[in-house]
Image (tube, rainbow, N blue to C red; front, side):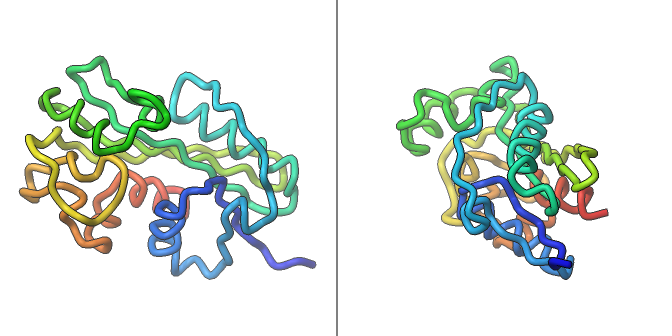
Amino acid sequence: QMEKRIIFATGNQNKMKEIHMILADLGMPIYSMKEAGIDIDIVEDGTTFEENAQIKAKAIAKYLPDDIILADDSGLEIDYLNKEPGIYSARYAGVDTSYDIKNRMLLDRLEGARFVCAIAAAFPDGTVETVRGTIEGMIGYEIAGEHGFGYDPIFYVPEYGCTTAEMDPVQKNELSHRGRALRAMRA
């Protein structure tokens, strides 16, 4: 009997760092796809965060049927832009465009924004569960903060008076879309 493992379907080291912090007390080893020896291209052709998370989880579950597979799909929704960039957050303004440029382009785009994280879990018995976590905020008027990654430097959370990139990692994980989704999934 192999020990129960969680495999997280991401190659993103920043995400893995957050996941290890948020799920530290789970008592199960958590590995990235790469660490589990899986290197496949997954076509994320869903139309929602949930669908894309499920597509990723199920794709990896085919290769590792005995493990619990977690996959997240997350991004930034800006109401004024019809919830763009949404599921295309990573591809917004081009895959190879730096986040400095993506952030600069979005800065003029006003209030009413949220980070969304959907997480799907594919279990060895074939069932798939999905949860969603969100954090509400707005697009700040300037890029601020050295923590976090991606769009964090422009995601301003009014009740804390700072961006998610200005929060220390422990506080960010308390409040963030990924922290909320991972805790819901842990439960």
